[in-house]
Length: 257
Image (tube, rainbow, N blue to C red; front, side):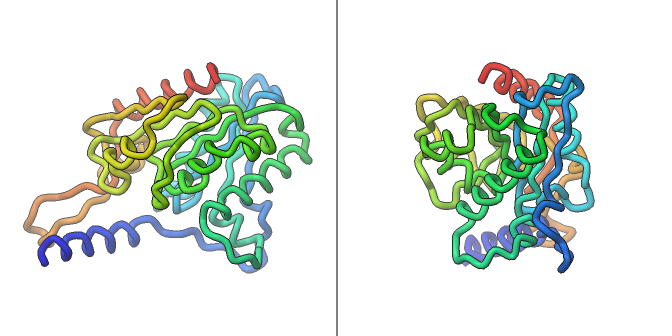
């Protein structure tokens, strides 16, 4: 009974601590697509970002993904930022489909938009970088050779990817997975169980939590079994060393693949 209560507390705190973005009634899908050009812009060198549950906003932080994009921009890689949760809502798409399909449909629409605007060269190949919830769409995408070719995706990188459908990763392109050893939301044991495969590199930062790369989470988001009394248990927390190493790993991976 105690264990069940603990799980309910953790689940409640988790669902409350990552708010979904509010979408104005008059918004359109393309309001939530953003293209950030590299310093030495080349329309054939690009990556698309798919954020977690909160979209491009993490609590009050609206800059994290743009700052990561700047690191790639400095290396000559332009970034298409896809606020996929908000974009899907704004599309008013009236189809009964599960989250993986929603994520991939929105990604496809964002890529079409960027190509129509001339930001991305139509025949060029790029990479996808996803965080947390994005894994629900990116894991099946990595396994789907036809869809990868259709979207011109040559590699996929994921930070602590969610895999609620427990899909076995068998990727047709190189995949980089980065996660924290102390992550209570996306557990490293689950990643190792379902995502160890040929063509996959898994980097585990032993002392890092979920959201370890998000600087605004320095103080962390935590819960206590008994308020004000029992020990803090972190759900999300920034780790400077792990963040630095994983960004370096990400850039190295994208340049290579």
